[in-house]
Length: 138
Image (cartoon, rainbow, N blue to C red; front, side, top):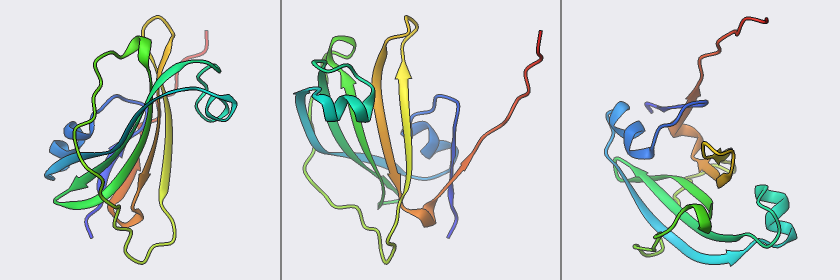
């Protein structure tokens, strides 16, 4: 199995990573809802209690294999116009009893968090890489 490479610490869309890895990528929206952050969602995502959010669950396919499932929470006031567009499908995990889970918080240039994402990857089809850069100490 040839693993797909993803980067940490940069910004790259699923479409961009699919092209870089020479894979055919597509996404399907499994769930789409508007909600208000309660205590549980606030603890999980970092959005304040009472925040108006979009929750989107997406399944990403690489070369027509369902390999990544994303759970996204978007701050409604910072992301307008989001809509659902697809039907429900399942993630095929073969015989695996685990998934790799990557969590991220995304902020705009004003320092406002507008997205929380948790991506779940089938372990035989991913590889994460990062370039560590030592910064000089003043």
